[in-house]
Picture 1 (tube, rainbow, N blue to C red):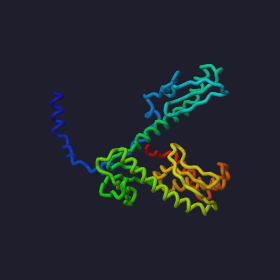
Picture 2: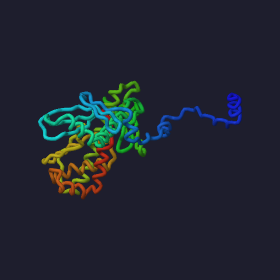
Picture 3: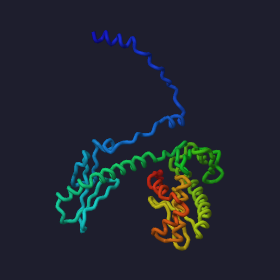
Picture 4: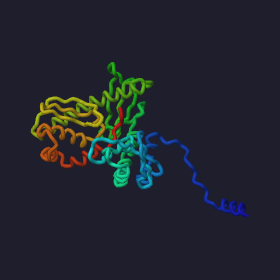
Length: 297
């Protein structure tokens, strides 16, 4: 009887819509992929757990098992830090374990928030990894730079490069053979980006220095992991070439920040007033500099 009912339902069911099996072009495919949905803290962490490689104690925080590293030392208070490896707790030698566990529970909201931020930062870093091959995409000036290998563009020993401007997606033609290794592609792209960055930074320094009433003397590029710029009293400016991944307004904020140090060599309220006079929305741009992820080279 059930089989007869099922056949009857199948008979009157609507015809399935035909499926287009034609493979979309790569660019179309990228455009059709929807963004990842925003996850709640419970969705992101549960039922997973966080375990520090040197964990010696555990705590159940809002249903999430957190194994943390406990360090004893000469200090007066209990301290908490969350890094890529997980949660670390530092406590005075005389504090009993029960009090440490109670403090961890009291900081549960902060700990879970930081663990989630660390997981999200790791996810962004993984997604920002570049597969160094023909057609690779690198963030560039707030948009995208597509790397295309074209041996016909070779004009020197290292190969000549050229950028074709075209909206948010631009093309960098590298004078490399199609069988070039990932390291060769990476090094050629980095060399071009560094040259472009230095030229752009010099232009922006010359643009803002008169507005601040300062004079810079020398520009050098850095590749520091976390520091975007520095300034010396003698007028020397160092800027991280990876700033070229960010949009121009963010680059300008860093340029103004370092030039402002030629007037105020600290981060006092007077310094931030100097920055604000040129870049009123510096706080928002500073946040973008912290939140956005650039590729590892």
